[in-house]
Amino acid sequence: MRKRFRALLLLVLFLSAMIVPFGQSDANAVKVYKVPITNEVEKGLHAFLKRSFKEADEAGAKTVILEINTLGGFIDAAGQIGMLIDEQPKDMEIIAYINDRAISAGAFIALHADKIYMSPTGKIGAAQAVEGNTGNAADVKTQSFWVADMISAAKTSDRNPIYAQAMADPDVDLPKYHAEKGKLLTLTASQAEEKDVGYSEGTVSSFDALLRELGLENAEVISTEVSFAESIARIITNPVVVPILLSIAGLGLVLELYSPGFGVPGTMALTSLGLFFFGHLVAGLAGYEALILFIIGVGLIIAEFFLAGGIAGVLGAVAVVVSIILAGGNPMYMAISVLIAIAIAVIGMVIIMKFFGKKLHLLNKMVLMDATDTESGYVSNVNRPELIGKIAVATTTLRPSGTVNLDGERIDVVSEGSYIEKGKDVMIVKVEGSRIVVREYQEKGDN
Image (cartoon, rainbow, N blue to C red):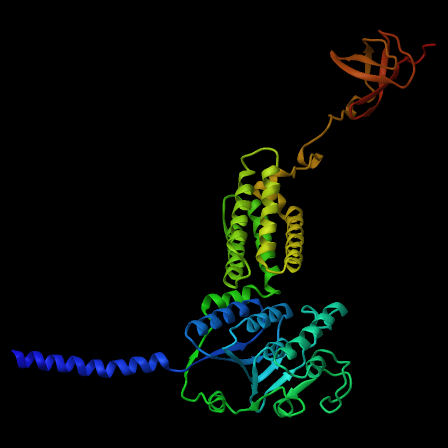
């Protein structure tokens, strides 16, 4: 019995001796976080990068490699990402690996990194601010502060700002790197690595080659991926998608108001608004206070159906609009998006009233749609042309209006202007709706 106990004790000690070193090795392993920056740079990307940096910091990683391959995106989103990179702990090294392209906003993000490495086909530059809807150069004001941002980004990593300025301003002339004057600067991997430029610490053929270059070939590489919720948020927070979502919501509400019960239009509107708030909450652009304000606004609008005065409805509409503006992060842009959605909803309402009004349930209660025309059987007075030429007796003196008796029927008439005494015979000479005109009747031969 004792021998068995000793054997079991030795086995436990042996296994403990084997397990502890491995556990210590995993805990002490050098960690490198690999974070992709692909597709368009927009506000949803900021939420993904914020989560990735937080995970890297909590895991004790001292190196984060941003693998960049993007043609750019929105400058306000790029500005937020640049500030996010600058806010990371000083002992965490941020490295940008340009795996093909870091254009426009991508170049701006790369310049905020501590070091830049490029693939042999890598390119960085072409960062002029443009209008999203036309692709033309932005206005002078926007262009000015964007050039200043590019210069500041270069200075954060101690790089010569003239090259960053040339990437954003075509008027900066660097003949050695421009195909012709007036072109934006775009550096190749070899040009960026030149000593005089210093926009790249080296050219590497792959991510593994980059790890070897950094002496991290034995490090544990942890790759972060965009979650499903973050993917949805990146789409929804796109400045092009936001007004479309709000317009769908507005049209859905208009159609629902003019339809019996609750159906597809209302579901469409609620789904659009739900996606809007979901995306902006996930992206970190909206707080719960905006969502609460929206719910209060909807509640006030519903209460308007049961309360008189219209105050609840007005307050509810204002609360809904303010909540949407607060949720967007950029009040000016969100205000424009709301105005676009309202305009589309109004146009939709006009179309509905003009072409479909008579077929819709609530609209008939709100607007008088029936026409009181003769085709529909409506007449203001009965027209009696058959009375013309008939002889009647004046039952009152006509001065010039009065009454006559025609075969026992009392009729209101008016004379042609002359005075006619009571009891005189009159002839009906004209009928104009309710106006019946008579003149004194004299038989032929009477003087």
